[in-house]
Length: 274
Image (tube, rainbow, N blue to C red; front, side, top):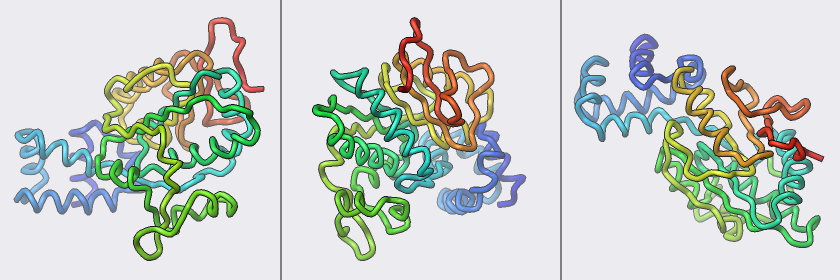
């Protein structure tokens, strides 16, 4: 499959060439196998088959998803979350905190947050109840996330004290399993980012390296606004370090010098990171 043929397929789903350019080799391999499995000889035949078969189209779209995950990916960001965002959220939401990991892939982001939440228990007498919605459109990724088994490469940025506390040897050689206590309070759900959010009033939403990277602007902008609308007043949104929010997005303020953290405007502007 050459790049022109791959672009034809991206156009069918209104996906962005710029988003896929650096990761296209692995995606092309998966799609190539699917093309052979359903007996197509050309890209035109394949696209026609996808138009005729809803299940094949859904399977193809899942094959287009990309999982690049490891624990504490972008260490400086997680330090800000630990030292500024989470303490602010905890102080202002004593009854409960809702978090959404939108495009959670294989779960590293979700479990990283749970590790930091547990670590904060020493700084707060009583933590609010934490409810995490972890969504992805690829059920294979969600199954891996639920299992919580990871290779050493996923753990290379974890501080040593956390590795000892929250991981044990996995069922297979050279794997690690997350501690069972980290799995509590997580709602793993299959979900497409172009649909309405699963629930609303989130205090924190992770939208890193998913919607803003892989979709064309005409789909990205309205879907992004739905994500913003799902935030509670004063809630925080985190995007990828190389991503930009759509120019038409409303209701967000950049958080100081952090290029990937935004806060939802409040009516009285009384909220804010301390």
